[in-house]
Length: 405
Image (cartoon, rainbow, N blue to C red; front, side, top):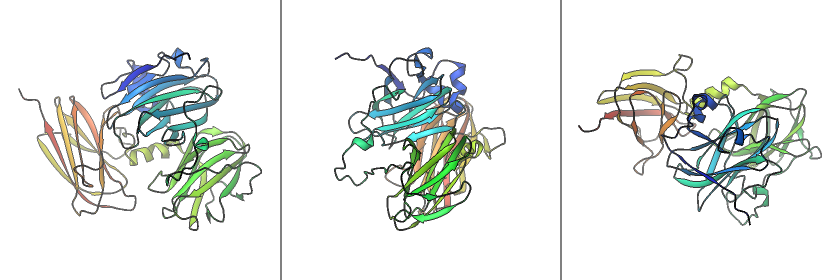
């Protein structure tokens, strides 16, 4: 058997793509990226003769980023498979920083896999572990005729695993309820497992399904039954699928599942994708750092001295602060739920928008603590609540440490 050459990269905080181009690519995500084919020319998935693949070592609370180009619009497959018990997931960003598609377990056996129709442009694949632990895994990008890395969830037998969900396929022959764009419909999964709609012109879409007690899971297909995307838990146990590229005019079908109770009503809403709203949602969830131009609320804390205490009412919409490190050192942040009922999280980004550190639960509690070695400069700190229906008082302590001299 011919062995393929595999490039090895380490996704660490100091990793750089080595060009000003990558610094601004994918809303800053590409700053730590590597061309999956070794060079930009070798990473054009439209022209390469075979899939491109890298082996990545991802350190805890970090991610590996692969860059690739598409010069001719077409179907692309992205996959991530971890070694051992690793559980990788990934987000695919377009050049502007919008998420095109995400996946966790569609490759089967905890591997991630997604296929989507890609318009010409540059894309970034950000892969990390589901639990933010270190992992070693392969990332593969190719066209649909290339050999897949994973088996796909539809090929994995149901051996009784509680979390296994076999997605129902919906095409033009499947009986389905009709829905109209921008009009909310409601029905239980038991009574209305399929919903159909028509696009009169090409359009990017956002599909939401809400009722956390039902825990809806949505999958989108075209009229031929081709998978277009899926989502389970976007906001708590509610689902949202963002298709940020224009879908062709025609008929589409949504397959709905309920992972908790299929007799409960689920509200379903299909509307045109709003890129600005999607980006603001990423800021709200601390999935990306907002700009410091006043377009999004960020409270300036100024130069960080030895210690700073901040009390706030914590909500699922992250509260953002900026702070200035006058010299290289360590930033340590604690977030304590003063009422004992909350579950705060913390995220720290540099001025460019690269995530430096993240933490949810520390010291076997629901409180959070992060520590990061940083250089002098401006940093953005987000604190938010993990539970979507919870808010409460949080006390935050920010400390600065400098190297001994």
